[in-house]
Length: 328
Image 1: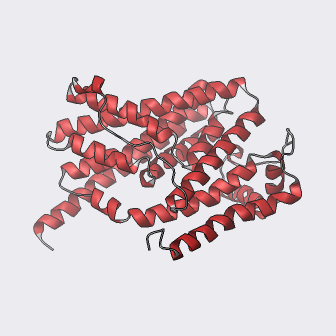
Image 2: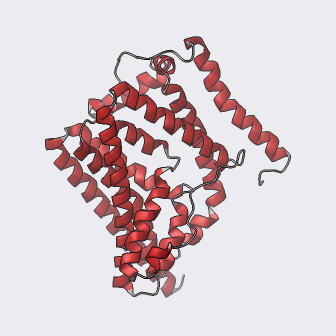
Image 3: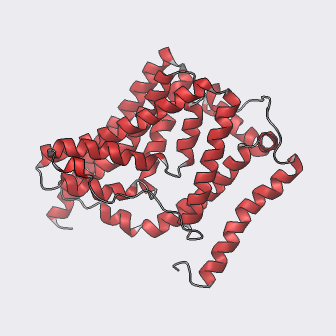
């Protein structure tokens, strides 16, 4: 191994260690502050919000942003490039925080059950549709970057980076990450715009960190984008299958009869036991509660519908792959 390769690996390790320590400091600081404002549960949700943001990097609505932020910050010098990448990330954070604040405000106006069911239903439908798209079974048009708007073109580099972050943050709102919609369902029920905004900000920072990290590595001569592109097909299939499974569960949970059935399963009891074993606060567990609303689906029909939501995509994928309509 040459000296340049060793030096490159050393720079990569230092940068990633720095980002890891900054992440731990961020989540720890938010959790410590939240104990006095929203209780220990809010601190745990801050960690979930951050993890959900980090996981967005492998999804089709966030990965393309790598190819926006890296060229934008390259060739500008380390300090200016870092400033541009940071401002781009700050724009993302502001957009996500604004959406989280709006969801918290709407949650205050709606009933707890209505808000939660609506978010679960939306999360499930989006996750399921995008999962089918990732598997190549259906075509779903994703939000994409099609060029810089005219009103940004006459501005300075730093201002453009910031405005691009604000604009492209909207693309991530419709991202098919069930963790994001699980987070939004919680934000809709916290009863506080301030607490909801804080979770949105932490989630936005989680989304921005991998993008800024890849940009910093590129400025140091480490091409991390090649690995992302090389693993894209495998990531798409893994992500697609995961989204289909989680989307099906969320769709079922959005229905009163479906959620009542789910609470009788071993998954529900196992989740509560896991939360208790980890010492996490009760806000993350799912205790017994009443289910209001009309039963749109009879209780006996829930298991067959859930199985159908699992089996139908698997059969379609096998058939399309055999007909070579899906890449081998």
